[in-house]
Image 1 (spheres, rainbow, N blue to C red):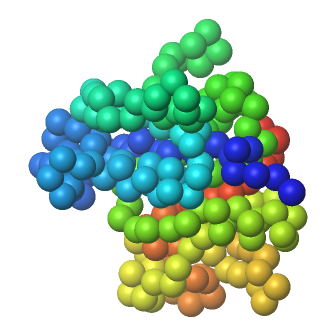
Image 2 (image 1 turned 60 degrees about the vertical axis):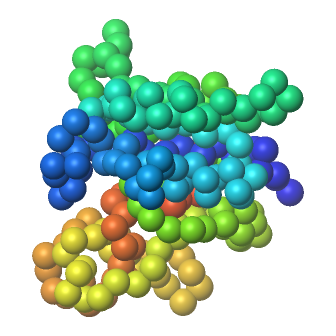
Length: 213
């Protein structure tokens, strides 16, 4: 069975964060301070480290200077530690002159760097959510079920459904449909909420080969 050393934690560095304005006037949402010296980005990083996932990459783009400074000043493992936290910033290349066009596009544009880590599995996380989770249990579930992709979600109230991505899960656990912030009441009634996650931002576990396909 694979181990957590085969897992890359990939954290979305966040966009404009307009709902938290003016806190996000000069910084991205994951860089917003919380509980004194901490930032929102520290939540998924802490979850990774406490789940024994020690290879972590953060995709950044919007108002990222404050976030970059915090990451570089905070996460410096010693020479005896094989883990790292690195930044994968949006960039223009010979193949593409555009910046990230969304979370899925951010992952797509960084496929070369993701594959260069030799990680067999990629855990995709939001960088601006408050929760505690043991990703090791999610990894074990993924491997035991030989899944292509595993998504962690939780229910939301029907009134909140238009704000979130919704998925429909069959009795055997397979995901049969997904709708991003649907307005149709029928779709809202047929699906379960993924509480604040957007497609590509769920706590998703997948084979890195599937990401490149």
